[in-house]
Amino acid sequence: MSMRLMTGPILLSTMLLLAGCATDKRSDALTHTMIEYANAVRWNGFEAAEQFVDPKVRDAHPITDLDRARFKQVQVSDYDDGNGPMPNGPNEVRQVVQISLTNVHTQSVRTIVDHQVWHYDQDKNHWWLESGIPDINQSN
Image 1 (tube, rainbow, N blue to C red):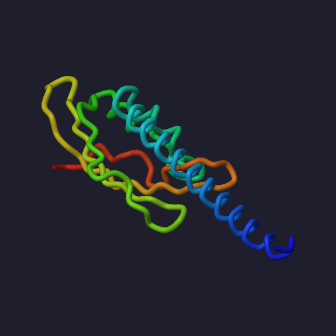
Image 2 (cartoon, helix red, strand yellow):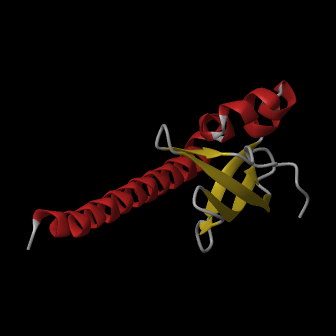
């Protein structure tokens, strides 16, 4: 077999392998980000979760002092990501999460629904939360 005939299949195999590596890299980054975000919300609070929000979104919608005061009044008692993230194109996933909040003063529990939109930054191999931190003022 001539070198020219072998080059095509080798090049195709290499391209498929690289594409698979990029997909694995994106998937691994998503898994890691989702776990870290859930842990931040669950154990460290919403202010810690803000680091996962796209910086452009953070700048456009900064956390107010009133928001900070409200965050201190609740503790996350459950974070249920249901079926997990669902693809919405090659660089976006959506996820619906139910978050149970316990009022630290009254011990009453309520659940909010967080509709998350995550976007993948290919240059930085990083997933950003586009939808912002959850609105804890939702009524049941």
